[in-house]
Length: 339
Image (cartoon, rainbow, N blue to C red; front, side, top):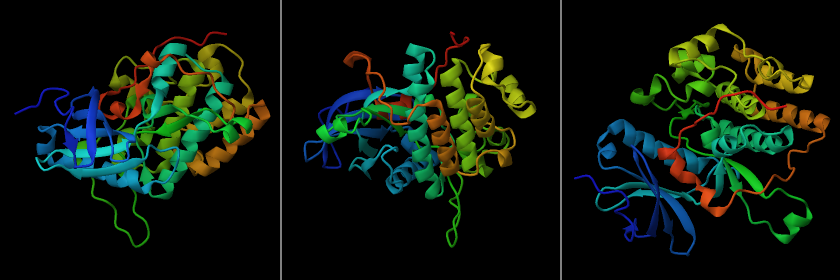
């Protein structure tokens, strides 16, 4: 029997978390805000009963919990626990973040200045570097999976002019775990392995064979996110998925100047061209190499990556991060960048 939405409010999960309210729901499950024994709030993803009958979905759910736990970075949403309740409900508890997704910010602002996007890319590259160090390729980097957290700064952080925003990478549900020395590759989840990720940000080689991607696919996707944020539109926009894929496979990505009609600094154009090179051997080899190049570019542009960003919108416009892994999809507005 299918439970009604929000039916877990007031119950306890794992004998640890008291469920307080429903944050969001989708085809795979629901996300609740809950309170732990220490009083700290968490976001708990709970798999729907029907989804829990699908062996691939269950394997994907367990894998996300294991992978999230092993990546140690302040730029990746941290896991607090995972388990299976007495009645068979599968759940994962993440830290509850306050802020908004990059996709939400882009829908509101349409595009961002270089100064505003600088710390977002810096944080995302740090998170990717940590994931790649653990042999994990995210495979679905897009604005909806980059959450801009609003932080409460300490007096020392305020005095040091640290940012009150921090970007966190969400949703490792379709990631790939690469083999390391003396460690076998993790089996693929065949139901999800053919075409994973969002076409608009997906690297060309991922379109061809998602199972064989490496960390450079994540760099391509982040480059596409950066292009979208600066230009106000995607580098490739097709009438449908097939035309979009054909463009990615047959053409090099356009320049910002050709899309917006504005003159852009050569350094930005070079960085984007390398991040989104059609042939992955022409991209940065690692996220750390890309991060070093990005920071050099920021210094040249006079924008330190830790520059403080604008305030978040009012409370009613904010989003709890973890609900997006079940319900969030990127919705990109089209158009050209205003001068």
